[in-house]
Amino acid sequence: MYAISRALHWREPATLRTALAAWRPERRRVTFGLLLALAGTGWVLTSAALITGFAPAPVASPADFVRVVVLNPHGVLFETWLALGGLLAAPVFASSVVALPLLLDRPVSVLGAVLTSWRVVQSHPLPLALWAVPLIGLTLAGMATALLGLVVVVPWLAHASWHAYRDLVDTTGSAPR
Image (tube, rainbow, N blue to C red; front, side):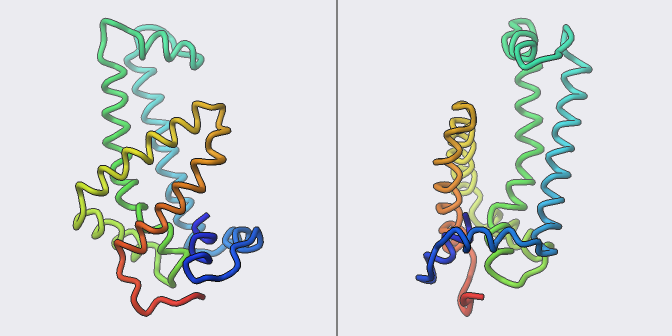
């Protein structure tokens, strides 16, 4: 989706071929994707350990999670789970908020993209914290529709994120590759 937004920005054809070309394995983007997958795996393992260790009854299904964790009136496990998720998600967000479109747009290292992303977050903490709210909300809304809503939400958020990147990162001298 970033490739489509990039092509539109440079007034190039924004075709399916443009989008698919961005999927070609490229070491920097693959490395960053693996780091994000590692972070996601870390969250799943941490989450499972928290729920397994502190749930008052076994949680073997999503319905059990809702019943035992979310709707439990005598505990704070759900609130703890949410707080831990936010605590773990914040550095991932800070590392990737502009790194993903930057890696597509310019020849920068993964470390350079992540550090740029962190500098942007440090320079604009409140606007980017507020930007995270619709990202989370719209993603959850898209997932709540049996993932069908993501067909609309993902391109929309990707396009908005591309423009956020263009507004937040100095791209002077940047031209189409």
